[in-house]
Length: 292
Image (cartoon, rainbow, N blue to C red; front, side, top):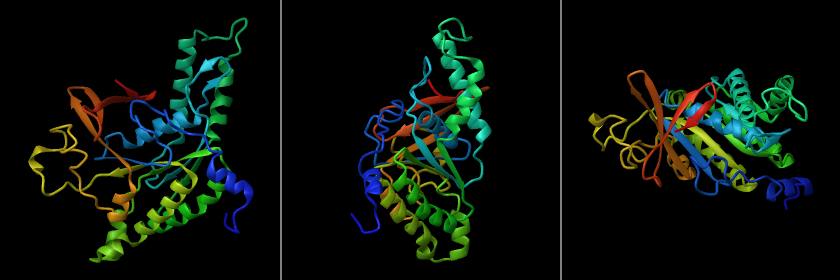
């Protein structure tokens, strides 16, 4: 233990934190604590919605009164780099999930012997929202400072089990413009961010979920095939170039590539992982992400 680390901090860092294994079997068939998960894809492929889906499962408790909600009841730190995150959207998804659980349980109204009341939903949603630390960043330098500062939260609050960043690539173009033609200059701040994130994720056995916009295709592949020509690992997961630098590329443990599929008026989304034989399909509605 370092001289600057208290006993409470050591306990929080080494084992008092709840595991998130089993958070979503549709996406994760492996232990997830201590790993970095990247959801990438073009604009409008459902990256932020998938992050919201995981956020809801984290902050909802497993049960509430007589309802089975299937959540984990942990706290989450979400850094919003795009300024697109909507608390109203989060509250709507929470409400829909809760009311769906009510409908499935047959307790749509509070009857004799029931411990549930519709009037209790709004206060309960507010209580769930308290499990979220939402932080906005407007530059890569601010993101670096924020990552440094949130370690204090992880070290003192073992209830915080999940770390999210939407989107890690938000500052790529401003950093590239300010650094000119220097590749080292472009990656300087990102490399520092990776070092700080690695210290937190591994040191506190956390799960880190990040979204990343895909803006470059691998030039060695046929650009005429388009993004949706195949759902194989070769054409999707391995088909994008890593433009955030080698340090970031080595830091990510699991990569998921998202695509949007439109047939007539029907819109669905696909997630691809290198270990899957076929993609996982999902839709997005007021209930959030629903896997097919």
